[in-house]
Length: 109
Length: 120
Image (cartoon, rainbow over all chains, first blue to last red; front, side):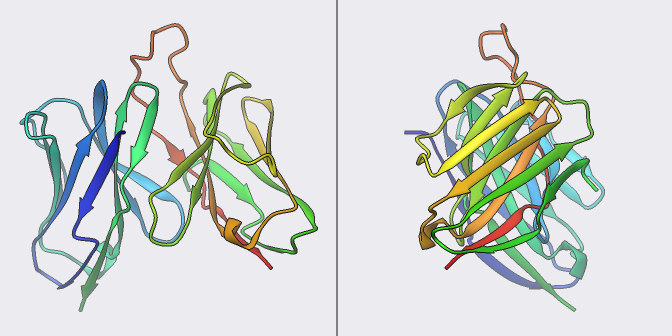
């Protein structure tokens, strides 16, 4: 059965810290991996990754995919309190998109 | 604002009530989805509609009944729910689900803010 596992489940850091969130997947006919940020209710799109080793970057956020080892990481540098949210990883394969349980990040002032 | 609007934002209902959740997207997309998000669990896909046709039903109990009158609107009709159905119900849309492409599409989902449902 397809599955997506995120770690850690929760993380508390202080402003200015750098964090790395992990996502491993086992998906039949893998096509892409996506990261979303869920602050209150609506998850908002961050990245879609389809190729190994190519880093995607947006401001202080970056992500990379390793299709051989079946995982992705999301890095956030110089964290701010506004980065506090649940970060969701999802993998697309076959006809379905499967989500992980998310990592709850709390950034303290 | 993601372009996907859900109403109501909050709903409290008894087990014998009938209610409906509404979702509207203003993005010109052709695929719409219902997801259920329970506390500390992954998002669960419930239903998918592509060009108004239901293409997926993930073994959802019949007390949940979806309706998609056109590509911009999606409803979830609720009746005789159970307390364990309490959750955040999220609607999403995407460009389409690659009809005729043999499944080789990549979906970028746009989510609404959800309806927080409590069943008493």
